[in-house]
Length: 356
Image (cartoon, helix red, strand yellow):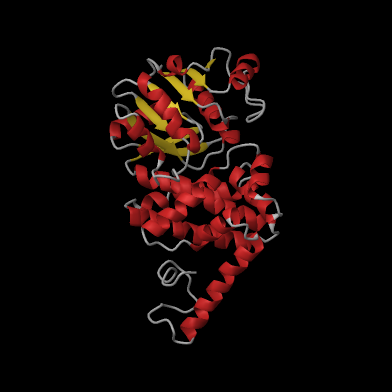
């Protein structure tokens, strides 16, 4: 039995707390919000973010960060990505040399363009920092539905330790050394899911959604590989797997926010309606900044940014994407674009030869 702390009492943190407790670990949940901890102590349930998922009576809840962190074998960092740096900075004095921290949020810091594990390593250099992600919704994990995720770490032994404490007959954990690929997949898919949600909100059908997912996957792959990630990582659970579930699921907050924007809500109105952190909104600017830094065309993510931050109507954004593809094909037929491959083929080999 391991002594584990969940740092952050949102829906995902609570779901993982239940998995860890089910596996026989001693679990402490920390939140900076006193009312949240009071509710968890009294009801043993997060009635707002994960209703119906009952937590065991011997699970501990606290607002005292020092007591939550000190002496724990594993720290599961589950705060929203925008609070990762500030929380890590507060944790740092209490973290011992070699203590394992597992980042389970998904995002890229806008100011520095750093993934979350890099932020934590910068703030807590004495820790062993890892990541865990994959196609997983708290609502399903919390009630024990079969789920597969990946634990990633630079050291194989660390990834396998994380695998050991989490894995059971309904929560399968694979391991990977490609931490960068995992984090980029987990962050970028949230932005694509906003686009997929916008298409749903506009009343478009499965054809449109399939196109966005497929083309979005290529954009994710292209940037991640250019940055040094492995393509097979993006083609696995933490890339295409996570993208599918986030674009399609009724539980997806990014898809829901996108749907509301497609229906005419502003970004802020959509986030207020969802009532939870919409990570894709925070990752969108960082994603397009990375694309520009590495010289990668990402037209879907570019259009999402215009909708979110330049008040461009979602319908206009979709139309611009489609008309750009039409203009591209016409240019090929007119001989204005050479060596473009098969004129009507928008597979990965030809996509990206011009900005669309």
